[in-house]
Image 1 (cartoon, rainbow, N blue to C red):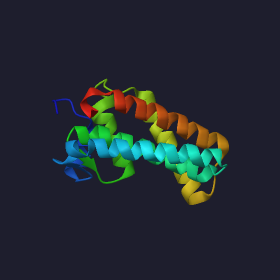
Image 2 (image 1 turned 180 degrees about the horizontal axis):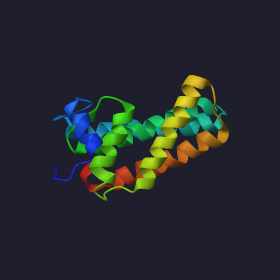
Image 3 (image 1 turned 45 degrees about the vertical axis):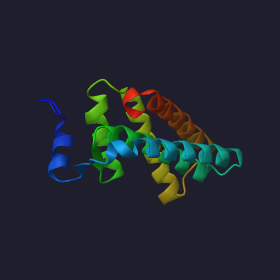
Image 4 (image 1 turned 120 degrees about the vertical axis):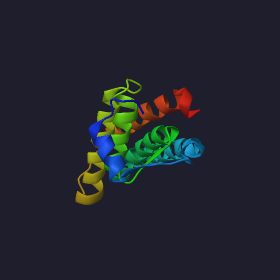
Length: 147
């Protein structure tokens, strides 16, 4: 993993919030399929004016794309938050993934939580999450280590 490691990632490993996951590489394609399925569902729900669930499904598309990335490195997260920590340490900090994608994932998480737990959602939020999910999935599909 290199000598210069993200401190939050290191602590997450110590606390077992991020774990080594030998089967991860086997499951990359499954995660990408789940990301594609969730994205299609989000687009369908947006067309039907179901903005809450479009927002939620688009987030989960991004979640599965992010998981594909960290699975490809042989790790697994124990929460949505630690998925971001792992993605940052394993890809963003190493220049393998643009920080803007990580920020879009975080923004999508906030929109999903607002929709899921607070009943706060909008057409614009759903469209934003879908656009981010499309970009994330396209990058995942074009990343050689995820093929």
